[in-house]
Each structure stands twice: as structure tokens, then as C-alpha cells.
Image (cartoon, rainbow, N blue to C red; front, side, top):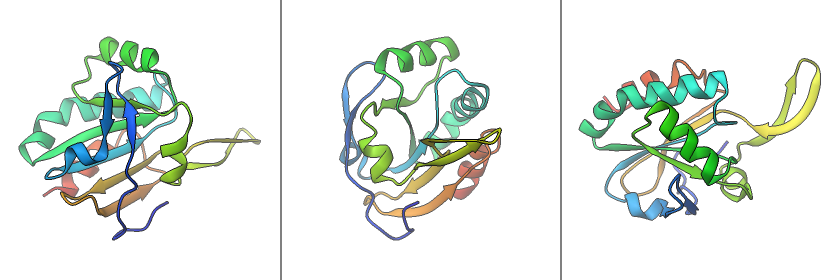
Length: 151
């Protein structure tokens, strides 16, 4: 996980509509950048829907939400449409940003070891500096936790 106080690595990734989005596009706003394993899985769906429900409150506090996984643009589009998600989903199929943010880790699931995205959320300030970092977050609790961080 990246350290609080460091400059967030710049990136440009396609969103769920195939449009390129860069971190620098959000200067002047706080950014909640959350990394999740896969679209349409129970935990990831719960987390995304909670971010969606709270999105107006994030916007009121001057923050945007960006979700990142290694799923394709098409998968993100289906996920967005199925659940009516109001925020941007970014596709990192090459795992370049996932690795730059140090969230590609060894995971153990039912005794099996594999590599995957560890659910991680960063709060980035208006100048692109990481001001909060949370690793191994609980999917259901993370959106409300992040809203609290903006108080």
C-alpha cells in the first residue's frame, strides 16, 4: 500500500464508456480511489452500490468516486447499467495502475494461494496527495467509512 503524504501516481485509464480518464482531470477535488477485485461479485457489488447510494453526499463534500478493477470496459458498462452506478469505473486490464498503487498481492482463499487485487481505498486531496489509505477494507463498510473521512 502506498504511504500517506506521497503524491498519488498519475494514470490514464478508460472508463465504462471507453473514454480516457486521468487522475489530473480531478485536481481541485478530493478523489476516493477504490480498487476492487471483480465486477458482479457479492462483495464488490455491495461496495459499489453503497458508494452509489452515498454518491450525492460525496459530491456535496467536493469529492468524486473512482472504482478500479482489471475487468474490461464492457464488463464495467454492464456492471454500471445493472446497478445504476452514478460514478466512474476504470478498466485496468494491464494492471499497471493496480501495481502502481501496490494493491496486486498474494491472496489466500480456502487454502489456495493466488495473485489478485486486495480491496484498498485511497483518499487523494485536491493537489493529488494521498491523505488516507485503507487496505483490506470491508466492502459493506467502506463507503460510509470514506464519507466519514470527508467530515
